[in-house]
Amino acid sequence: MANITPIRKETHQNIKIAAKRDLSHVASQHIAPITAAEYAQAATSYPVVIVKDQGSERYRSVVMLGLEGGENLYHKKDSWNAVYIPQSISMSPFSLGLDPEKEKTLTACVDLDSEFVGEDKEHELFDAEGKDTEFLKGVQDSLGRLYDNEVMNEKFIKELVDNDLLLELELNINLASGETKKLVGLYSVDEKKIQALSDDKVLDFHKRGLFIPIHAMLGSLGQINRLAQLRNQGDSPVKVNAIRFVPVTAEAKAETEAKK
Image 1 (cartoon, rainbow, N blue to C red):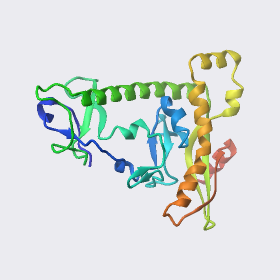
Image 2 (image 1 turned 90 degrees about the horizontal axis):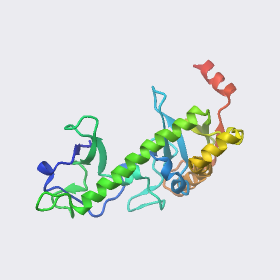
Image 3 (image 1 turned 45 degrees about the horizontal axis):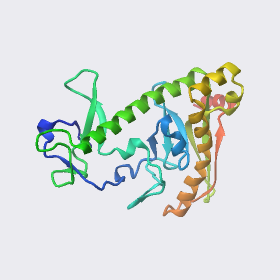
């Protein structure tokens, strides 16, 4: 259980952070948050998709790390099967949280229960005079950039929603056993609607740099084949014969609703 606490020099003067930190905290995590600023790099290794939070209309973008819950095909004991690591998971044991002393203000937090935190580690958070170390300043800068990227990402997804550019997908998986599985509730950008945008809208999107994450997301969908490859090369006895994203049609959605 995480013990995420705002960093305070009064109480964390002696806390240190391990110089070498792995990604074991996401070993069983099948998706990870990603921001639009990262899509281009993430697209070289992961499928980037949009999901909707249950019980709300809020969309968020994620990278797929596995083909089912609890599966992370990129995590190995001593390595990660991709060059790029999403910011959301590489910052551990740090995160942003609300400052209990300042209303509606975010501050740097640390998970005190993390195995990478302790008085016997290498990186100090505060020096002998109680001032922030260069290490902590670097963490704060990285968390600030992550927050800015998350704000930009919210705006980017809102643009897609407001312009009706999201396309619902399902992932069809054919297993070597003969069984078929479907992953639903996934969204990407509707390429046909992008092509049908008015000239004014195309110019607007181009000037604001929106086509960069749009095309990165579309191109990333081919990385689903990499997930199948990683599954087949791994220890799982459940191998994949074929895998593909399929658009969800209005007819299929109506049929699904009728069966409920």
